[in-house]
Length: 356
Length: 64
Image (tube, rainbow over all chains, first blue to last red; front, side):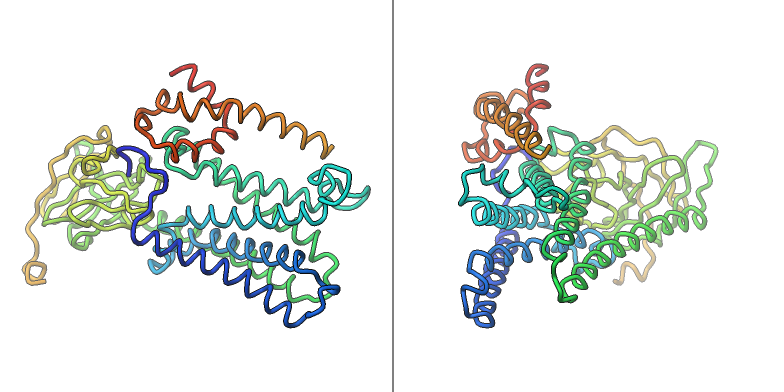
């Protein structure tokens, strides 16, 4: 959350996360080179720079797959939420490894001639597929994403533009697949690397399709089964009080409106938009911590009754007027301006709730 | 064709560098008041992004 910008938003958890990334990357690259040298001891067969190029390339591809599956995985299981929490640092680390791979390639394959090393690598012979160029284009996209990963860019480009720009990762992923399939794997007689890349691509694709289908079905089910009946005042009956667990929310889709998260906290209900002001995270999948709704993606917090981040932070989200009639929860579907205070709707908990 | 693309990139990024350095050290707070007391490391961190997005930032600074 922002009251001013910090260079790197580290906390104790993120430092551990980053340490694990650094150890895993150095361990993988070091292990790959050492094991390869054990199995292929002769430097004339395969030199150390080539081993490093391959190690960085494989490491980068593994990291890219992990980055791409974290999002859908976190929608399927809360166990993946800690990975999502610091995905940005994983992304920047991935770019550093991919850049290292590119620099090694340019230095090793293009650095010993009279031509510009970059052009020497990218200029493919006539008739051949320019797989190096695919990799170069992907690297530019990854560089753009890493360079604009700070919240400063998110705030100043706007959420929609920033998100659209970072969706280019899927184009870059296709370019990386083309780079690998038309490059090192084209001449590969062993089928195992091709199978592994195919499994990775299938995992990325199937997880995205699975979570996307799940979202569509959930919207459809909510629409079919809810009693979204407007009363005479235009308010909408969205659910029962008993549908909502303490300090949790129920996400409701009001027809022709965006999703609303109805949070239950201290035997009263508050309704806010389901979209986090930071990166559009699903607030309704988070919980109330220290009296604040906490986004499951990056931990941004908002007071449920007014949609404002606790001081000194300045983020605001839209709130909705809410009331309880009997055990039914009614919402005014017109959102209030971000940060508008709304009176929480108190209700009588069941005796067993009070016991619990 | 690839050579042309590379040279176009080089020119674009050169313009970006010429813009990004003064932008990050002098004009950052003009488009975002939260950056008013930003540290030097933060401003340095913004330089690569400004090199990429200099046309957008140029418009923003002119209208700020």
